[in-house]
Image (cartoon, rainbow, N blue to C red; front, side):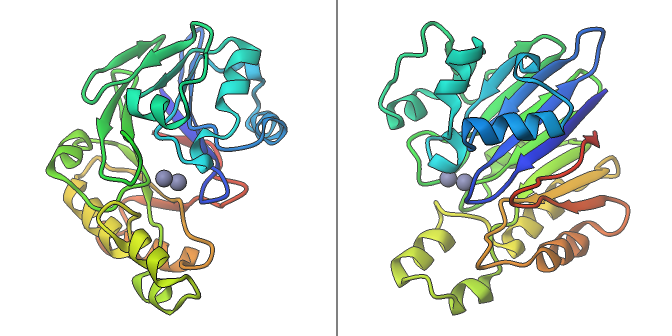
Length: 256
Ligand SMILES: [Zn+2]
Ligand SMILES: [Zn+2]
């Protein structure tokens, strides 16, 4: 059995737990965009301690994803995966032998879990998002991208659950107090997904087995949970359970 839980989602910090059940469950922490104390608190709320984490995957170098990754990994001797570009982006710190380079399309076996990174268009050096599987079910994680590519849609085929960025509502972003350059950045090809763009992705990867969707990485200024939820409902209908990840609290544990 595979399950996952967002520990927080949005520009203030992202971290998601993915767990493959077993005699010894395997747990991957995707992104580490919190302070080390806050991460500890949220792990405890998830019923875990630091030693329960078997691996850390960092999607890209933006501070809302990298957070305390280096400190956390070194302190608890947890292996870390990231792209070479992301490593460059954080100034090549010394991970003391814990670092593994992640590459587009190259699956990684971690205990009962396999994860496969794939390239996405975002304004970072070499951003990767990923799918996770325990061999029976498949979870897709997709945040921080400006637009869909056929490459990423192929990777997201046949997921039973999807955590998908619904960053902004295009009208709210237009009307917001953001300076023009920032509006262009967010809405651009290498920025973030609007609810409508996320809806199109959801529509194109939709299949009868897609049971769970989490709308994630919502902008606090330029989106509303009910708008993201409606966009996903329009795309997927009522046969998929739709949750919206809270910026601070994330989500409850969700089965894939
Ligand atoms: Zn982000
Ligand atoms: Zn980013």
